[in-house]
Length: 114
Length: 114
Image (cartoon, rainbow over all chains, first blue to last red; front, side):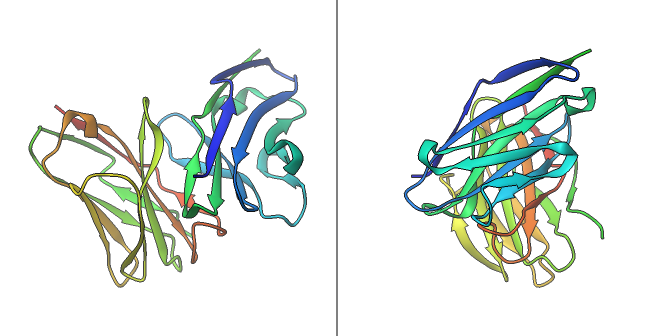
């Protein structure tokens, strides 16, 4: 079955520092990959998605992710963290055995210090 | 364009009762999915509906059911509530398929079972 592993349940950075949130997936077929963000007491908001058109995917709010098939990774980055980036981030996969649904990672809580 | 709406936002029920949650998708979206979010299990897929038909179902007991109406609005029902059903229930809509179309999430219904 498809699965997603997010390395690090909590990540803490200083404002202005690089944000790196790690995601590895397992898939027997080329997957669709997504990053979502969830602010407290809200639903999930799509940051970006990979659909095999390009390995480097740019999303909203300055985030981007790079698909690396050899490493089965889809890490999320942002060059300079802002206080408003503090939230929980979820990596998700669909396709293959996850066809018709999203399979989510356990989430990474990002804390941004002033 | 209005987003995904869910009602009610908060609900408190007693063990053994049943509950119905409602979801209105984005206009034009025909696929509606439901997810359960808990601190312990994370985000788990419940089921997905398209054109009033359940296309996909997650690994939840039969107490969890849903339906979709001709206007794409969806409801999910949980019968004989258990304490473990306390969770945030998220509805998401997409144009045709949650596999490759963006899924847009509602704010969720917070269900507390006492």
